[in-house]
Image (cartoon, rainbow, N blue to C red; front, side):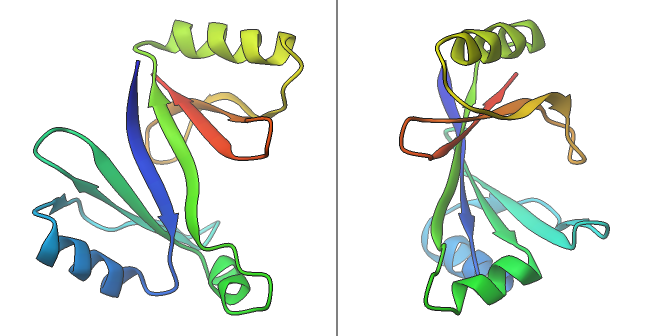
Amino acid sequence: MKIEHVAIWTKDLEKMRSFYLTFFDVHSNQLYFNPKKEFSSYFLSFESGARIELMYKPDVSKMLETDHPRSGLAHIAISVGSREKVDLLTEEIRNAGHKILGEPRITGDGYYESVVSDPEGNLIEITE
């Protein structure tokens, strides 16, 4: 297993992208935009293969500006190697009594993943 990427909600997607491109020798994909969810993101890739996902959504951006911000780490994605392993691990976590927040599926940006919650509510995407 390996950590696939770390995702960060941001108020200013382009400013954050510019910062990481400038200082951390990453390469960026093209902007991903889902008009139905008003969600935008970039994946920033390191030479080692590790990635950071910068994410923006208007309602989250507004929330970041309130007294109850949710900034910083959004989720950790852990690659397990196959769709079958995503399904099996999701069931193991469910059977251990932990919350499954997203059943295994193919996402709009092409991932096969499930989303689970750790004991303190942090989100983990289990990817193939």
